[in-house]
Length: 304
Image 1 (cartoon, helix red, strand yellow):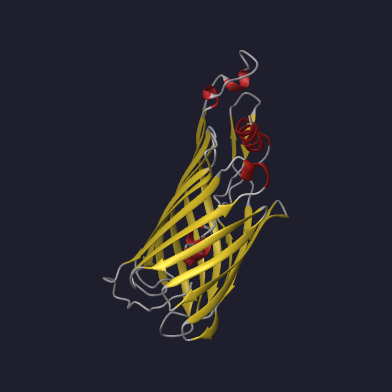
Image 2: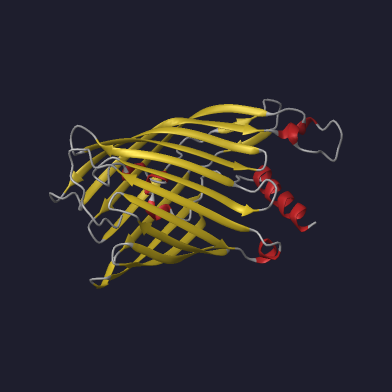
């Protein structure tokens, strides 16, 4: 019974309000391209990342998200490009987006560790709502008799500033105020414009131990909707261990450097309230690979 109530709550939230419009990740600090197009090329070589997130595992219709990103410097160091694919689903509603990304970078050193970037992304978002798959309490309800499949354009913008020890960025990954409707006086989703502010710093405690706090603020319609505060400790440039607080729960984070090219990350969310009582959990896995065959040398370690 509790699972049914939680599912109804999730579904009602998605239909009655803005829903989960911007994909949410616990490990955003390891793949900022998903929230800020200005991050493109920051690794100074070809870098590919995959994240999969399964939220509230065990609940029917619970959110799940997958993203794949790839980015690299182009023919000149000041220019970078890439691509971003995101699929986000909650209940019978899903959004799939594909974007091309470009960034212009201004460097203040030769190693590329101190720079200011401006990024743009352009792509398409496909919205699907399979209402016909739901069991309606009222027979022949016109709201649930058909599905919605629509595709809309999207534009994003971002600014990213970094040094060897800290970074700060502003991202607006969805700047098109799209409306996905059924054409019969039912408005399905009105896509608001999120404003994301993120940053972080690395404190060197000793040669083998470092501490990195990060933050992410999300503003939607002029109001703070998400505040994520986290901190992690790095051991010998090989292993990150940390935790983050995002209302109303806590995420445990870890990242392991398999080699100077490959990173693997994992996070687990400690649920609160009714979700914790039914024994569900949220898992997120990240894999990042950085290719060495580009003309720009690999600078290791990199903290952002």
